[in-house]
Amino acid sequence: MNEKIVIKSGRVLDPASHLDEILDVAVIDGKISEIGKSLNAEDSKVINAEGLWVCPGFVDMHVHLREPGQEDRETIASGALSAVYGGFTAVCCMPNTDPAVDSVGAVRYIIERAKSAGFAKVYPIAAITQKSEGKSLTNMASLFEEGAVAFSDDGRTVMDALIMRRAMEYARGIYTNGISAPISLHSIDENLARGGQINEGKISAILGLAGIPSCAETIAIARDIALAELTHAKVHFAHVSTKNAVQLIREAKSKGISVTAEVTPHHLALTDSELIGYDTRFKINPPLRSEEDRAALCEGLKDGTIDAIATDHAPHTQIDKDLPFDSAPFGTIGLETAVPVTYTILVKSGILSPLKWVEALSLAPCTIFNLPGGKLKVGAQADITVVDPSADFFVEPDNFKSLSKNSCFIGKKYSAKPVFTFIEGKCFSLCL
Ligand SMILES: [Zn+2]
Image (cartoon, rainbow, N blue to C red; front, side, top):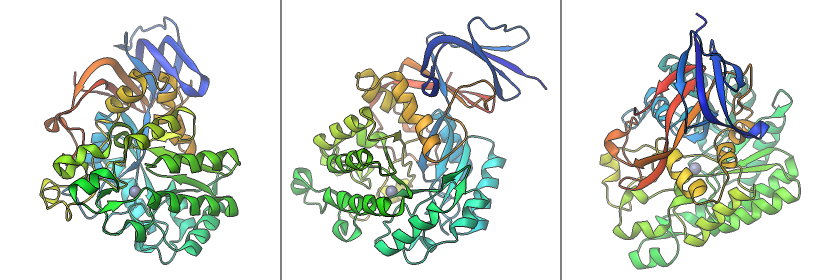
């Protein structure tokens, strides 16, 4: 077919090669064929990218797609479409579906459903323990061989330290390309957090809601840093939300322990003060924290303690979110707002350079989970995200492609939006 596309005169941002320059990017047959100045665009489809940022495809290493089991909230196809519209070329989906992704058949099912949908790439994360119950380990080696890219019991914490140790030891021994299988940890001490609804602090006291203390996170993370040091496993901390956790991870990294971390757009942008109206859209786990925590998360990204930005996209139906506060489920969707929210909070404000921001959304998640992509280089698959940094973005639930509308950003205004997503050269033109 030899279809050629030339993305003309964009600001090409490639953190892997420290490239930040106005250039053209040519794509032939799904691969990047050339990057340079004034490329020949004869017989090509030309995309004028003047004023736009051309980045390696963004990868969200933490989403919940709800299929199998809760297809009224999201399906693999609707989630993968939502990803494309959010500027993501690939997502990694958590295994806390119904049933949980603890079998080879479930891993295969996700890969096949994603392929037939034809939107963003979907990489399954398999459960650490059977049914994610924290009791007995899954057959991690076969799950990995089938295509799982990491292990997690996200939504739950593996509370038994011996089981966690064994999981890390097994993961350490499973390799692709000489790299051990990563484990992504939801780190909240479940006993300490039991019954908690929001961050424990002034706001929970004012509202009369049970709190989840920030030390529920630091206790769990401290344990797993100790286990990472013991086992030499590749340990990744999901949705870090507190200042003290950032400090623990900073110290662990300085000691050479193999840990990485991600932060969500909502923890970077919002605090528990949003909860004053008892709006369940802000009921999230880990909870929105204090301003001090929020600032520490931004600082952690800036100094490299936190590696990646991931959305923890967690779709819920309106009926569920309309339940009384104590009964409503935790979570916010995030795929279609991550680019504007994090651009505004991190880049527009001057906290991160454009290259560092792009790295947290592309190269870092690919490196941590050993995924293809994350780089703009000749010969690589053409997974590309093109962002308009000068656009205004108003968060309107009607525009979401996700089946769920439970966004904590509704009604807020941000800057920048993705305008094209290329997946192996297939161009999705967004909101134009
Ligand atoms: Zn989680």
